[in-house]
Image (cartoon, rainbow, N blue to C red; front, side, top):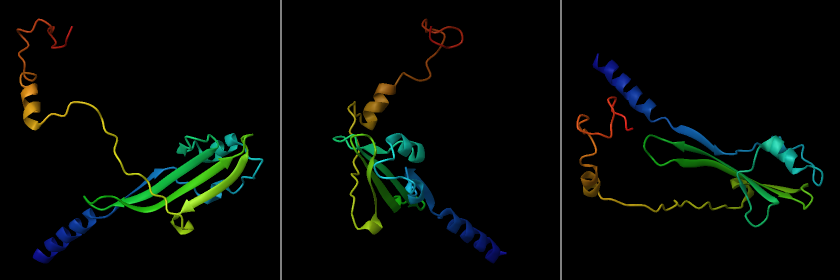
Amino acid sequence: MKPIISAIALLLIVSACAPISHTRGNFVDPERFEGFALNTTKKSDVISALGTPTAEDPFNDNVWFYIGEKTEQTAFFKPEVVERNILEIYFNEDDTLANIRFIDEASGREVNLVDKTTPTSGLSLSIIQQFITNLGRFNQSQGGDSARNRDGYNN
């Protein structure tokens, strides 16, 4: 009986560590843009086929980026990037397709994405300060509070 219970426990432990996969961004399949023709395909045709771009060049409205990545995470470990690709699309001044460049790890061009967080302004309280500021906010008696009606809601 012990070997069966041990085998079941081992199976549960191993199955709990199965990696979880996520696809983020616009992971464009190269087959989706094979019908594009240089100097004839319009921006609207690209949007119809691929959707809106993930990002646009802030200095040039005629450069679009479709960025996608696949990650896997096992248990509580940090997610690991399995695959990343970037599709750069350049347009002429008349909004026709000028060039398509597909960038992935196989192309040899390394793209370093910035891994920063946006700082937020606001009050940063310690645990003791949070505790003190929350004293009296919970479990107020409803009988003596004139701002509340019979149902306990504010007027």
